[in-house]
Length: 307
Ligand code: AMP
Image (cartoon, rainbow, N blue to C red):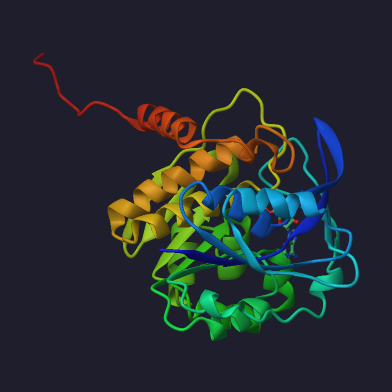
């Protein structure tokens, strides 16, 4: 089942306590596509400016990402500047320049319109809606968002949420969206806005998946060094949706495995700056880390010994 994604492609300038990078390749759709491409065929909808390197489009194509829906427009590519303190779970946005995204209206290539699974990555919810309008009969739609849009385009965002099967959102954004500090209650409140399933990304504390009324938890992989958390959320979503779309099944067991695969892919992402660690993975490496996750959360059944 091919997977359509719409989202941002960006130059990211990021500072963490461990280093700094100027204008690295990023954006929600970029991380998502690279990650999901290890599981399924991805059809990308996004826009870049004249300054975006052709080599990065070649990279996506080398991963079999369909770039027919990637538009190049006059002007500059979207830019995001952020920093992280020692708490790498929370990015502080310093600057957002929409540039070519400012007046972008995606026109889907004809063969994108029959996509069966769709991921509306973090982007202006009005654009997410425009894409949804053009997809004919999807089986599964998921959406992400962030504070910037929760504050600035609440109505459009609620219209998106009313039409999706799954929200994939980080913890602080879930609190803000639901106006609720308890995570279980926040997820339930978001489910009331539309999505049957809510996946909450919790940075170094892993992810919670509320699939209908079942809850499952996947840890984050305990790495010795986390370099740059930028893109971890989108990479997580790429593993999650990439796997679901490949399997074409959305049962609770598939959602559990997909949540773990999301954490597996995010664990690679944070080991290096930008997209670097997602460029040359292979399925064996992914599978080996998945097995490490299994060992991480596997415990023996409770058996009381005779006194
Ligand atoms: P995350 O996966 O949550 O770390 O998302 C990081 C990515 O989101 C970065 O590569 C940014 O370029 C992108 N981003 C930041 N702000 C926005 C925004 N307002 N709209 C779309 N994408 C954004």
